[in-house]
Amino acid sequence: MLEKLRLYLDLIRWDRPAGWLLLLWPTLSALWLAAGGFPGWHLLLVFTLGTVLMRSAGCCINDVADREFDKHVKRTANRPVTSGRVAPREALLVGAVLALAAFALVLTTNLATVVWSFAALAITLVYPYAKRYVAMPQAVLGVAFSFGIPLAFTAVPGGSAWSWSAPWPAVPGVAWLLMLGNLAWVLAYDTEYAMVDRDDDLRIGIRTSAITLGRWDVVAVLFFYGLHLAVWVAVLLPALAKPWWWLGWAVALAQVVWHASLIRGRSREGCFRAFRANHWVGCALFVGIVLSM
Image (tube, helix red, strand yellow):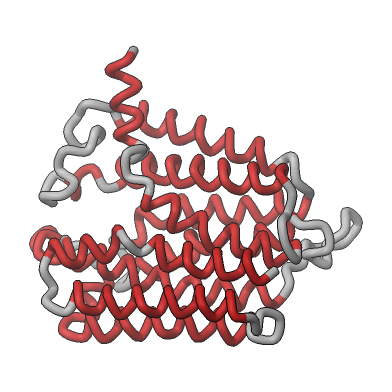
């Protein structure tokens, strides 16, 4: 049982928290913005645990979908499903249990959040197959990794125009704008991630933004970073024109400059280091928001 538990923890990347932190910071930022400050322990617990659970479920689905590709990539060849230590059906069962646990948390919020959670789940299920058909599958991941933002606005009382009798759960426009900005951030850091595996991906014939962008990859990553920071500052400027917000934004910008130095040589080590450090960009913005409320 202990060995099986270790395999499951490896399957959901428990020892690599960067993945769920990339999801968590923008979600919590949206939660604070929607609530106008601390959202309460209930919603904080729901969105924190829900983020960890859904990211873990996504890892299970992704590993099953990519098991034939992953065996040809140095970085992923030893994953539990790819190496045969966990059967695909078993991995999907683990993912289903985790997703159901996340859904149980959503059920403690309101109908609007429940309805929109199905759209979030659909994107999570679609993403692993996007790289077979889409030139920049990172854009699909960007939607999946940004869906916590509209969910946060629907979950906060008064954060949405929804009522139980309304014909459709409305999401405030600010949530969609923040989601668009966050999508640009996902394009930036996941392109860095794709740059790590570019040689392997070219050999096995899958599509990534790093391959599609070619020699413009570094320029594009910096453009995506800039778009992310520009959208968030433009959307939040009327409400958060405060020193703490600007300090958090400046710290995020400084990290982008550092990442540019890491990826300009396109080395595996530099690109992977930049990717793994990306959650600090989101953390800086979140801290700036919290201190400004």
